[in-house]
Length: 319
Ligand SMILES: [Zn+2]
Image (cartoon, rainbow, N blue to C red; front, side):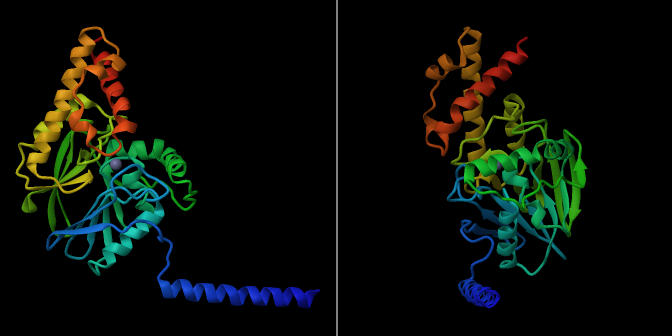
C-alpha cells in the first residue's frame, strides 16, 4: 500500500516537474491571459501603457486602465497600477521591458479599484495620492475587490488595497520633483471622485488626468460631483498642455478636452432644464440628444446611471 502511494506520488512529482518545464518554456506566468498593454513612447522619459477599453470582464481579467511611466534619474514613477495584484505585476513586467530602473514611486489618480489595486505588486515603492483618496481606499478598497470578483469571475485572493503613505490636500497644486522630473500634483475640487489627483509635467506639456478625462469610454458619474467636474475641465484648458494621458482610452489632445467639456456641459444643462420643468430623470432622458455619447463603449450600462446621478446632484443643490 505504502509503496503504491509512493509510486503514485513519484509519478505525480514527475508530472509536475514536466508541467513546470513546459510552462517555463512557453513563458506562462502568473499574468497569463491578461491582455498586453499597448506601450506608447511619448518622449525619452515618458511612456504610457494603454489598457483595453471597457468594463472589467472574464476576457480582460480586470485590466482596462491606462498607466503613465515616468523614467527619472534612478527610478520610475508609475501612475495608476491596475485592478489586481496580478495586473500590477503584469505592468511591472512590461516596464522591465522598457527600462532597467525600478519603480520607486506610485501615484494613484483616485481610489477606484482599476487605478489602485495593483499597488501591492510594488512593495518597495512610495505611494502618493490625494488625502481624500487615501481615506476612500481605506474605506472602500475591499469593496472594489468584490466588484472585481463579480465582473471577472475570479477570486483575486492575493489582491489587497494599499493606501498612500504621502498625501496632498483638497484643492491644492504642489510643485514636486521626483527622480529629477519636475511635476505638479493637482488636486482639484472633487470631480470624477471626491479624491482625484492629476499630474502635470510642465516640461513635457503633459497631463496625466485619471478618469477626469476619458476617450471612447463613457465616464462614470457614480462618485462624481458633475458641476465641479465641468469646472475642472474648463481649468484644464487654461494650462499649457499638448498631450493628455486619460484614465481610459487613447491619448487625447486639447481639442478632445474641449469636446468632452462641451458634451458634459450640454448634458448637465439639459438635465437641469428638465429638472426645472418638474420632470423625472427617466422623462428627461427622452429629451436629451445623446448621439455623441452613444458612440462610446459601455453607453448602455452607464448612461442611465449618469443621468440619474447628475439629476440627484441638481436636486440636492436646489434645496
Ligand atoms: Zn477608471
